[in-house]
Length: 293
Image 1 (cartoon, one colour):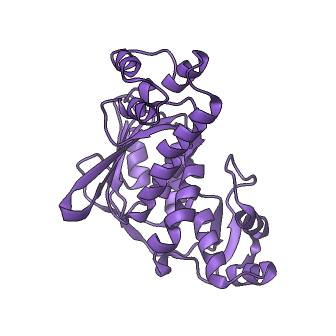
Image 2: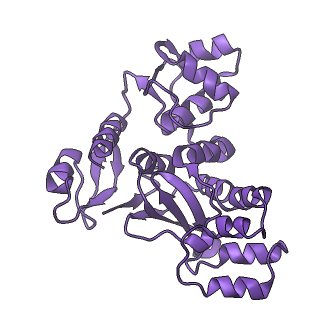
Image 3: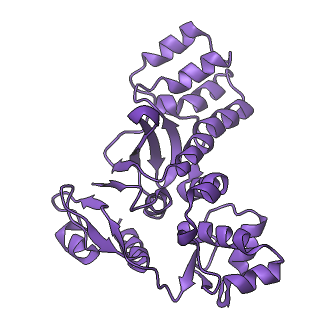
């Protein structure tokens, strides 16, 4: 089972939202275009909706290379680990148990590997993505740490959202905000995000929330957009215009979603054309898929 599409019609935050809430395990591949038409792939592995590793190659040697560069592992020892075809635990956890690395080393490695690398993807407005639930987890690239996909999305939007998000994508000043779920989910909000979420009661508008918090309007619009993008807040009523999307779902024989779910969703198989999906419908789709996965 997999999903695929373009970031220009289905944002990275929306993709991460589905994988997080669906508690999906597998590999998300994102390909973006750099200068001189050079394409750069990014590989992000998930376990039950949590991001556990990220890399730019599929040779399972990036974490070992970083350990060598930082002087935390010698080349000969790293070579021995690279020849191991199967580990029963993440490489970082194994090295910690053997006394080679400390917990602070692993935290530093994970921060560089996942939040910083993934955050940089939010500056790209277009690219291709594909999720493969059959891909095995790369134990040699894993530190033993993980992060909820939606938390990673929030971090990326905080860093690059202001430059990557179009003004037309921001909620209108008169839009009413409402909490989309009753709790904050498992996401760490910053101070301002928490306050906006608390005030999203289905009565106050973006302008009224900005006034209550004594914050500039554009700041509250950006915060509101982030919360909407990760599914914590919604505009009420949701009047977003329809957008063309090329997200596709590939079901397998006997899969509970199957053709019926594709018909309900308005989506089709890998080789289908585009279809029209509104943001309100997208939320319904996410909830539906979550109930099935």
